[in-house]
Amino acid sequence: MLRNKKGLTLVGLVVVFIVILAIGFGIYKIFFATKSLKIKDLEDMYIVTTRSPAESAWDIIACSPFSDIGEQDYFGLVRDNSNEYRDGNPAKRLARVRLAISQDWSGLEEEKVAIQAGDRVELTYDGGRRLLVYLPRITQEDLTLLFDAVYELTLYVAPDGSTYYDEKLTRLAQSAP
Image (cartoon, rainbow, N blue to C red):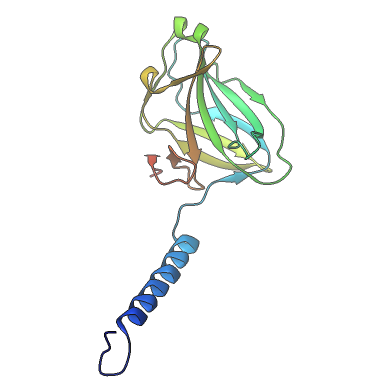
């Protein structure tokens, strides 16, 4: 076995190096990894700049991500152009926020989704706290057909209002300034 002058084996050095890396990664995740916005009750949602000329071409739905057993908390939705907010139910405990840009086939006849990069949605939650959430550019082509002619794009929200394409918040969609 390879040893240096002090009697340490090469394998021992590799093990120490791996332990240091693991500790460093754990500290990084605790202090520097992006965390999800967690709320209990959405009180209002307002589109700062509406884009659709039609009264209700698409919705922005706020809910929690699906659990392991397929359940989710539905917080509410707002319609682009009318900016009409429809309240959902509060969560039983703090839940991460997922936004779904949603349009059914009837909305396609009126107007295609055309959200510009940096467009904002203001969330009011948990006793009046407010957060501007920043959306990426979203067009009709970005939406995926889910079921019953419903098209959707999912975004996940960070506490600073940035949005991400994935639940672990590693693929940035639009950063907050």
